[in-house]
Image 1 (cartoon, helix red, strand yellow):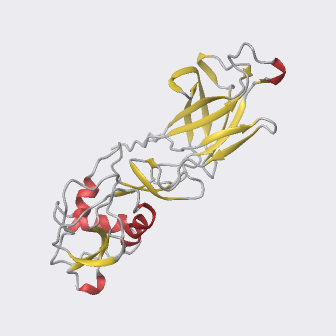
Image 2 (cartoon, one colour):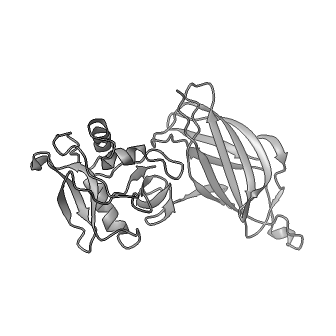
Amino acid sequence: MKTVQRTLIFIILTVQCLFIASINPAECQTFKSQKISFVAYDATGMQIRNVTFALTVSLADSKNTSNVFYIENHFAQSDSAGLLTISIGEGKSVAGFVPETIPQSVEFLLRIEGIEIGAEKNRKIFVGFTFQPDHGAGRVVQNPKYKIGDNGEGGIIFNIDESGLHGKAVMEVDLDSKLPYGCPDLRVYSDSPVDGQVNTLLITKYCKEDAAASVCYRLKLGGYNNWYLPSISELEEIYRTLFYKGGFSTDYYWSSTECKECKYLSGWGVNFDNSGKKVTIDKDRSVHVRAIRTF
């Protein structure tokens, strides 16, 4: 079965002097091409190295993104670090035109879609950069896409790296019903305090379909299907960063971390009252659940 991983790049260009008849030509800048570089990541956050992509580049009005006024195609190969470099305005023109001058105080959306060619996986690259060109130096500056508390990636961002591109998101609301941890009479060794993905896979393998982690694993939400039940450290981080924003109940929430010292009868959870206390909960008890995903 082919694995298809959808990938988009959204780039904001702040440009000068286009479509403004009254503008002083001295304030305009001739546009010939704009070189940009970006790293291609797959859906797991790994760089896609030494791979050729067919790219479609389009320019649109940032206030009306359906108003696309230019499209061009490129072929580009990622290097050993996953880096691709193209020059906007030097590709094969498909429709519209690149303006010769760039307007003042007008923003445009630069959208790039790419698909891997000559490979079985047929991957589509995933990056999420926003750019502002430095016209004086001809340099592109990368701006963060997300910060803690933003809505995106199917939920609310509770963890983000320095680039603002990669992190973790939690569902905006609880699952419809409270659920048990599952496997009340079985040790499943899902006891990692940090790796909720591994814990979720173990619980899904050994416990019934109504186990909290199993429901998270099967979840399809916001166009994503890589949800899982957070580990205890991930759940505690959600409490610290989103307690006042996430709309949580002042009640217990499951983590995917089994309590090693409890003879397999309990799992770890967090009380989302004002304490945020880490607690052990009997595995057969049904409590609140929020799935998370990594991007």
